Image 1 (cartoon, rainbow, N blue to C red):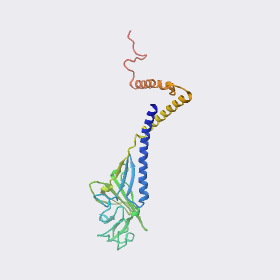
Image 2: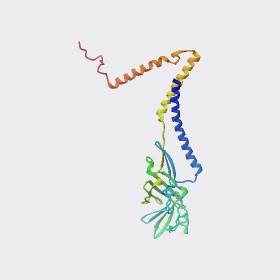
Image 3: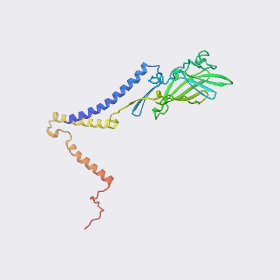
Image 4: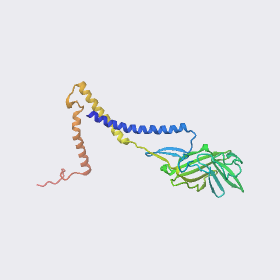
Length: 292
């Protein structure tokens, strides 16, 4: 009977541990599979936060947005003062209409295909002339969380370009919004050639997988201790029965200790209760008054 109970407790603990182990194996397989099968994938981010697994896939198609976060026009456009920014998320830009018309577009397609060889292009007014700078290419795209403490806020898509004279960058904050696409609505200049903008898009909402962690580390630790204790009693009983020749209830190792354990626990518990609650009404200390 004791052996069966011990086996049942240990089996349940092992099932919980195996459940956690199986989850992590599946998770690692998923991540490694994507790493080897889709090396060129961009706008992907996977992470564990708290007890949940978050997976962002901005370029994945959905029913409402078959191109994911990518603009169906081939580009996004935002302007502020004398500055115009064109960009595309997760890919290079495509212009079927209204291509950029500016000088110094050699790094992004040249005069005849301006904007077609990069992911972000900015044009600034310089003495009446529109001058371009490439601020992002597709191979430089990186994705990170907007808020480390709240993954559901969305992600930041960062891109950069290293030119012969100046290095440029663009940061696009893509906020999670299941209601639809809004923006881009602002354009900020953060440095000499560093820009930031933002928009809202349903594709920035993560797919969440809840992680059921079994009993937790404290429950697992307690169960392991019980299993070890049960194994000790089982091994001691077998040894005393077959090798020492003990029969009856005396076959249990350290029987006297186990028989007195409940009384010791009761005494210890009562002592703790009296320490925290003080003496009871029926208890009389050596300084209590005595009625004669």
